[in-house]
Structure formats: C-alpha cells, structure tokens
Length: 448
Image 1 (tube, helix red, strand yellow):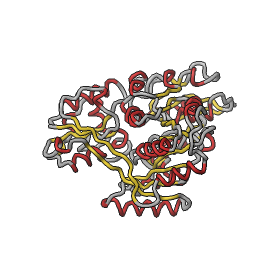
Image 2: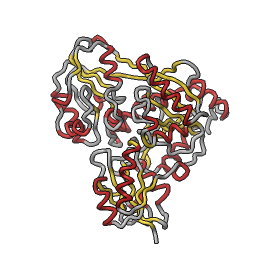
Image 3: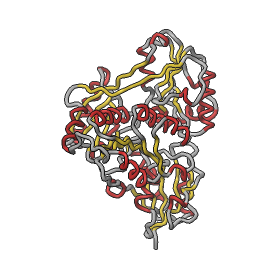
C-alpha cells in the first residue's frame, strides 16, 4: 500500500519536495501539507494542475498547529519536514510530535531534490536569513556580466498567492512585479537584480522554472532564500555566514548543511566590532569543512542624504525576514541611521496596528526597528498606517525594495543601500574569475 505522507512547510521547499519526490509517485499518497512561518498561507489547496494525475482534487494545506490531529485523522505513516531557518532543537521537537503519534519523521536530502541544469550553476546560500546572500549574488552576477556572460537569477520560491498563477514566473522589469502581484518579500529579493538588468526566475514548479532560465543564460545564479540549501546541482556552492551571529552555523537547520557542503564560505559583515566573531566562524568551518575556501567581506551601507537624518527623530524600517524569523534585532537602516547621527530611534511598537502589531507580539526582540512585512494587501495597508502614525521626523528604510513604489509615505524618506565589499585575500572576484576560466566562459557565444 502507498505510504501516507504529510509535508510540513512554509510555501517553498515543501512544494519543491513534493514535485521532485512525491508527484506521480504511486508509492506515496500525500494527504496534507502544513504551513508555518508566513502568515496567511494555510487554508489553500495545492492545486490539481500542479499536483499531478494522482491528485485530481489537489492537496489541502493546514496550519502546522493541527499536525498531531492530522497524523491521526489522515492516518499518516510519515511526516516530512520541509522548511528552513529553524533551530535544530525546533526540528527535533517537531520530530518528537510526529514520533509520539506513531509516524515516521523524514528529511529529504540534496540528491533527492536537486535539479540538474544543462548550464553551469553557482549557488549562493547561507547559514541564517539575513546573512547577506543577495549582495553576494549581485556581485557575482555583475562579475559574470563583465566577462560577457549572460546570467539568469533563480530565486528561492515565495508563492504566497494563487499557486496556479505562480507555477513558472519570469521577471524582467519592475512592472512585472506589479503584474505578478508580488509581495513585499518578493520585491525585496527581486528588485535589486532587476535594477541591475538581470532577469529573475521563480515560481512553484522549479523544473519548469529552470528550463525557462536556461533558455536565456550561459550561467544560472541561484540566489537562495532563508538558509535553505540549493534546489540545483551546483558547479560552485557558496555559503554566506554572518559575523554578527558566529555560532549559528552549528545551531540552525539547514544552515549547517550549507556550511558543510560549501566550496566557498563568505564570512560577511566583518568590521572591528565583529572581528573576534569572524574568527569563531572560520574555526568552525576549518573543523566541519576543511576543504572550503574562506573569504571575508563586509556590507558597505550608504544613504544619499545623511544630513536629512542627523539630529532627527527617526523611524527605522528593516527587511522583514531578516529581523523576524531571521532573529536579527537590526539591519542596514539601523546602521545608516546611527552613522548619520540620528537624534533618536523611535519605538515603532507604540504605533503598530493590526497585523503589524501581531508581528511585534510574535517577535518580542524587536524594539527599535519596524519590519517591512507585507504578505497580503491587508498587511501592506497595516504597514502603511503604522508608518503614518509614527511620531517621527524622518523614515529610514533598509528594505532592498522601494516602499514608495507601493505606498504613500508622508514623511521625509531615506532609502538605504548596501553592497558587498571584499576584505583581504582571496576575494569573491578572484574566485569567480577562476570559475569563468575553468568553464571556458570568457567570451559570450552570440546566439547561443
């Protein structure tokens, strides 16, 4: 008899695991997905158009809190854990839940789920959300382009809307973000690449996504999400570690997988305050993955008008995932506000409304920054109202997307940028130039 399976997820890795291992596989019957981490993604169905011939009615998606009842009511034999950036302890608590209900507990590995590309692949992953993957991916893409190489960016999935419409997406312009009704989280990850002239591919069905990306590129750059491992077999596997969270590479799933699999580990956000922490990370890498090359980097934070921040009462807005489930208490906007001489960083909790107020309750470590959450129209509206209510003289935003594209902000607004810079030798530039030579990619094949 087919084994009955529940897949635990957060609208990303879970769907990919289903597509690569369970879809059209008569040895298994997936009886449910559970959803966690992202608000409002449960209560849907994985549609029959994506689920395949064995699931003519699709597959229901339930809140993770119903897991125990689902194991019993759906007579599940097996629970498959399929999302990222959670502590090892958290994973084992979920395993204990499943085992206590007499179900097996499973993690799917890279060989079962990685797709093989016809083009060279560089994957950029991390040990934690907010370590600085995208600035590393952006620099790599620019280096490849400078060598005359066509680049396609593949992003980790974030299908929080109507799944049938998000099966296989291509973004070439900022207008495509509006056309696809992208969330703030999607815009944060896609906008910088689009502004740099690189197409972004994403969706639900990554076999389709990959084949579309291959049509336009000589090299695929996987710009990972959270601390998940890559969906693609990689010719160069780069893992980014955060010097402000030195031990987290050993404590979070699947960040430790990325640390152990890496060809290159980028120790990011190195500055005088984090120098000792950088040494801790490097020692951990030498112990767990002695063959990985180690490089150091920092994030160069910039803002156009520091004088407009100096001495002011400032509302700081940060990239949402970094400061929520990523666990950071601050980001680039906080640093920019401090370096620009802000007179006071106001407490945004006093002004939060609706779903934004709920986020602060869920993440009590947040005190001086407002996370740019916007997974739904309601949440975007609540974010805009929270900003409107804030008693401040300036808004400093460190989210990589421009909030002004999707909402009106009636206060002086300062956008913060940040890019990767190498610290010492070797550099990411040297590694990518070596990759170009090894793959014979120095000259673009016109018409290829």
